[in-house]
Length: 336
Image (cartoon, rainbow, N blue to C red; front, side, top):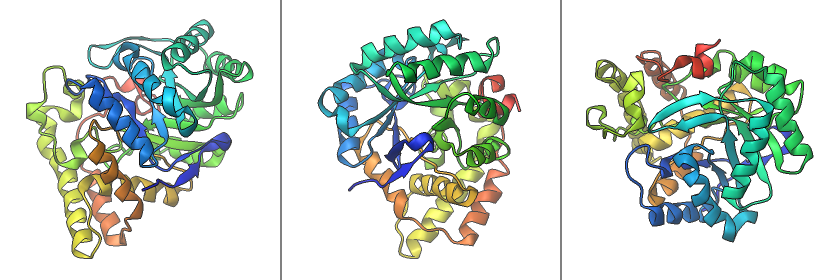
């Protein structure tokens, strides 16, 4: 099976579904490195060629893992990585840096770990509020001029920040959390991206696994990053089961109508439908440790919803309880 392709902003063409590399680091529990590499190879074999990582995933170990894939298949991959967060997801972030010197330092370190000469899409991972965004984007633009980076991206920026960045250099994509239970970006950021010709790359499109119906928040491991997120707290989980129930119900209705579907496929297909509805290219980047899940995720590309399905999912999303971030100021929702 081959995934379809889509053009984000600035002429960057990627597979319609991407792969989020953070799942292949110990943020949701221990990882088998051999299985992780096999999963990456399977993704590319299946046509999922847009691979997303970041310098802080596993303190650089995720980039090193992906370098093993790139060593054999660089020409088959559209590679995205990020800079800006200091620390790691499991232990907690200690700082955000967007100063020009850090931008230049970070890209060289990433290129070395990845074992490549050029990064296809280089993101500012989070906004450093101590530094004008113009300084950060101008430094990133310098990386394009130097041939180290092909396209620029921004993660968790507000609409205003996106507009300022685009006035300096073309932006290929905004990467922010977006899913059936995380829709705040639809208020301002998504419309701005559509207007400016910027693509959107939703991370955690399956709600960090919650929307699949397979996550029991009360049984998360002690080193599981989700323990820090308010909507996974015991006080919120019961209320949030409503969105899971809606996703499962739509999956069952599709199956009864001759479209076999899983909750994960429903959640991903919903995002693709939203992209068409709101007028911009949308490329979700679900992550997984298992190759079989990649094949399952690709099944989302063929699902068709009725108006009733969309109404049910929209209604469930309105009832979600709890912030999507342990620190709302670090995501666009907390600064709009």
